[in-house]
Image (cartoon, rainbow, N blue to C red; front, side, top):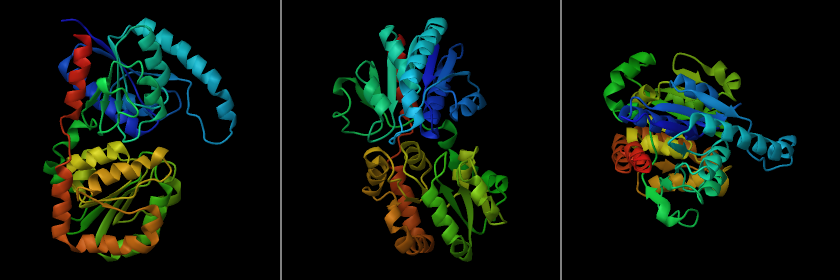
Length: 362
């Protein structure tokens, strides 16, 4: 059997990294002898997360363009040129059969160089509004796997395949792990568990909300697992106590989802896809600070099908307490949201994406 070689690139946030790792794991299960290499941005979280998942990674000197005038912006042309040159060296030395990009700035130079070299490329777009890197790469990519319909205004229609977003394999059966999860997090099985997710870096407004509402939440016999993000951990770790666990980052996502009764979450594409798979009642608080307000669009795709509740940041102070208390007291509503969001899951997304990759190398 031929020993295939795969390069995967995606990073900056968990939303780009974990889909790439999920795709790599599925490829590894099909091609146990394959060789893998990840390429990321040298100072971003993928440089830690990818080796933890068991894969090699090389870093490029690349970063995004800031919306305001900064010194980093002035360095962008130099960084891009350096990253293109290093990408060319990586491609020439590793000689991949296919290159896969899941978004983030590091995937730009790498897939551009691969396409110019005639190596098949596939990009995977998680959001309802594509990022700048994937829009740029779409012209030369062989295939584009998307999670949402109606993206023809961004991508060539003949290249698109609707697959959904890859999720970690261990989430698909998280329900069976509830007893293990309660023990792992040392929870009280008689209390409801609220899981708060602000994304891998954290969400300032969500953290401010939980800080303000914490006493009220605890008074309702609720225990809280609060992922505040590494940027905010030093500010909020003081709230750790018997019924509150404040974490910068959660490694055991399968167990934390299994333990949760209600979830408060941002509406990044990967989070939305994971929450569909695990089927828990969700209150989405979309970030308004993203391109084309795509988190609100991601959340609407679920809310419009009665699969979740959404609160805008501007509504939190007036509405959150009432909405949360009403949901907490209404088990029927919790069950209904769980069933409806599960109907929107695409558990086969990773396999379908890998099917498309295999077509490029056969």
